[in-house]
Amino acid sequence: FFFGFRSCGSPRPKQAARPPTPLAQSMPIELEAPFWGFMGAAFALVFSNMGAAYGTGKSGIGISTLGVGQPELIMKSIVPVVMAGGVGIYRLLI
Image (cartoon, rainbow, N blue to C red; front, top):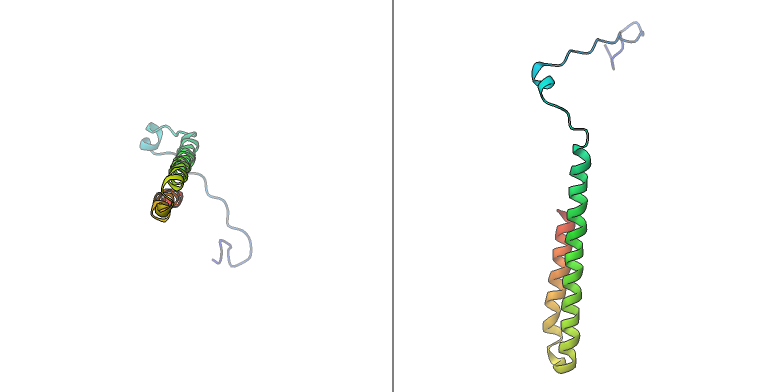
């Protein structure tokens, strides 16, 4: 037998499907389960990146406010922007 064919070249006859086991009959199949799984992943992705964008915006406003009063501290205040972006990328990877 080679790739499901007999040596004479004719295809293998189809086998009858096995009857379901009692355990399989007792467990209902939820056809919408993949939908809810993918929707959960999509919601997690959307809301995590919305949170990262919100954090980046709030820290950008803080940097702008700080730049008016104390311009020498602007480089120190870039860390929250980088951290918010890093968290967004990390959430995207998960």
